[in-house]
Image (cartoon, rainbow, N blue to C red; front, side, top):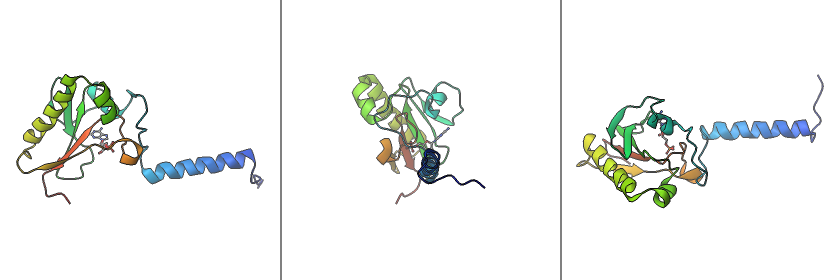
Length: 149
Ligand code: AMP
């Protein structure tokens, strides 16, 4: 079998590809760049357009709430604005006051619909690479239904 000489362009390219595969496998999913422009091909944008199904628990003019496909607690719902914002920084900078209030209202209404407004719950919004964000459409995780560690 012919050997590829180390240091050759093909060997360098192979090492690069192997490193890339390892890095994607290690993370499981690609992480979002917090400064990236909005990319409307993301899964939540597709749910908003009705191209993908979602188990919806609350909807309004400004926001949508649906069950997380991979729940990490008894109750795990995602609340998203209908507008196109990658994360909370971009939402705060560019959303209208009505959109901001609409999202807050949706969070509160979702907690009530899910019956955790009195027992309590946790809100999380992973942002960018270090926050571990995987879907580049601003979303808030509402987690509860049990005592969280
Ligand atoms: P994050 O890692 O903070 O960006 O959260 C993305 C969340 O979206 C994860 O908890 C996923 O389980 C969830 N998710 C991904 N695809 C879907 C989908 N089609 N429907 C509902 N939840 C989803």
